[in-house]
Structure formats: C-alpha cells, structure tokens
Amino acid sequence: METGGSKTACALCVGALACLANCVQHTTPEHVERGGSTLPVEFCYADDVVPLLRTDLKYAGNDNFVGRPIAGYVGKRPILRRDAAMALQQAAAELRPLGYGLIIWDAYRPARAMSDFRAWSRTPDDSTRTSFYPRTTKQGIYASHYIGDISEHSWGVAVDISLYHLANGQLVDMGGRHDLLDPSSATDSTEVSPAQRANRHLLRDAMQRAGFENYPKEWWHYRLSNSRPWYSYDFCT
Image (cartoon, rainbow, N blue to C red; front, side, top):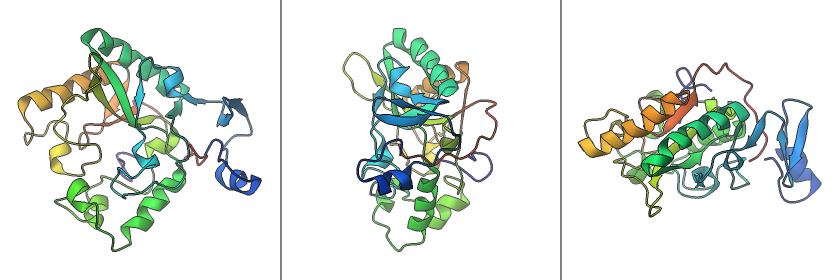
C-alpha cells in the first residue's frame, strides 16, 4: 500500500472511443503500441521481462480490501517502468536456483485508483473488515499509513509481491494475506512464526540486493530504491 509521506507515491480500454479518451491520459506525448495496448515508452509489461512471473492483480478483481475492481484496472498484466522491471528480473534470477518464483499482486497503479480508495473510505461499507483490516477502521487505515492519497505504484516503481514454490506452484507461507492491513503484516512482526518471518526475510533480502526497498509495515510492498518522485501516471492498466 502507500502513505502520504514514506510511501508517496488503462493502456487500451475496450469499448468506444469515448472510453479510450477517458482512460488514456499519458504524461508524455511519446508512447508505443505493444500487443494491442498503448504504454508510455518508459513502461513495459513486467511479465515480458521477468521469467516465470505469476500475476494475480488483486485490484482488477474482488479480492481486495474494497471488495470490488478498482478504478483504472482494466487489463490483467503487470506494468512497470523498465528500470523497475529489470531490477525485478534480477531478484527473480537470484531466487530461481533456490526453487522460488515471484508472484505479483500489484505493480503500476493508475492515479485514479487512489481517488477510488478515498471515496470508498467515506462510505459505510465495512464488509471486508474481517478479512483485511480486523483491528482498525477505514480512518485508521489512513492514519496508520497503510494507504495515502498518492502512491509510488502510480510512478511505476513499486510492486506488491510474494514467493511461490516452482516445484508445485503453491504460495510460500508468509503468515498473512496481501493487504492484511494489520500490525502482523510488518516484515519483522513477532506475531507470525519464525518460519513465516524467515520467508518474509528471504523475499526482502533478494529484493534489496536487486535494488528494492521494503516498506516495513507491509512485507509484500517494495519500491525501487533511490527512485525520484515521478509524475503519478493515470493511464489504465
């Protein structure tokens, strides 16, 4: 997720031209067509770069803390800036001989998604609280800096990510789900078992060596280290 401070932060929308005009808002006049979709030239599809990368974009479906697809999520493929994708490739290459692959839950996030999160926070709907924020409130999610109004994801340099076993495809036990907005999701939390914490550290160490920085409150969230504040892009995924 992201905070307003420490974690500051549709290529082709199927349908009529009016939908396309509404969803594609490039921050640079230079863009290219890739596989029927339009991306700014500095972006790429991460699964074109990272071998054996599994994708399950949580905000494109219902399995997230809002409980529905989020604004701007149209496609099913992860998008990143090229430098972030190349760094992720490095992490994957280190983990592969150990028997692990990477699964990505979020990558580039359209800026409009952040507005959608905020709009949701103002509604009375608490249907996802038990699964995603059991020990806090919607207001607490923001106050505790699990989420903010801008995001590094919108710069294209952040990922929500975990490990899976190459041998059988099963997810590695990290002691909690993606977007469990709870103290137990801290990378060094003592509320999980030593084995689960070691798995979080395995991911963290590989990602750090590849040039990423972990957000300590969320074991799954990484941003490219030393990445300057880019513009918050708002093209649809």
